[in-house]
Length: 196
Image (cartoon, helix red, strand yellow):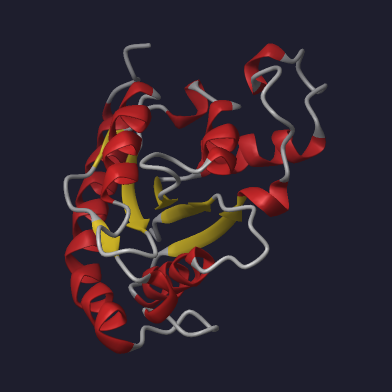
């Protein structure tokens, strides 16, 4: 069975460089035999949070929210491509995730962080770890961190330079960690219903 992995990206900026990392991850996971799909918060374009998906009567949520809820529920695992804004998380990605709650439960999540500077989005990754755990996901312990994002991938998402080479070298362990937890969570869900 091919792991169904949703890869979330959240920048709304016109000159987005982190999207290259997200596209690289789609390609790299596909090459491993997974079934990845990029979920671009800007393309989904959910409104600022007013009501969570679960707060809509059945069948009345906005179409984009309904479609994304179905994808989240069907996924085996998640990857959050986390840019760093002012020592914290991207508002677009945070807004998208906050529209859902139970839909995330009992699946693993991995964090791929990035920034223009040398800290590679580490502060964002740290914040996301707590957020995703609170939202019911098991967060893997192997991060993927890319500093100097503007020089690490070309326009097609191919690794270039030292930063790209470092990301490509780190990817197998990052993906192996996620795959292990994906298999474990899937086996446990098949064996026993979640406790809540």
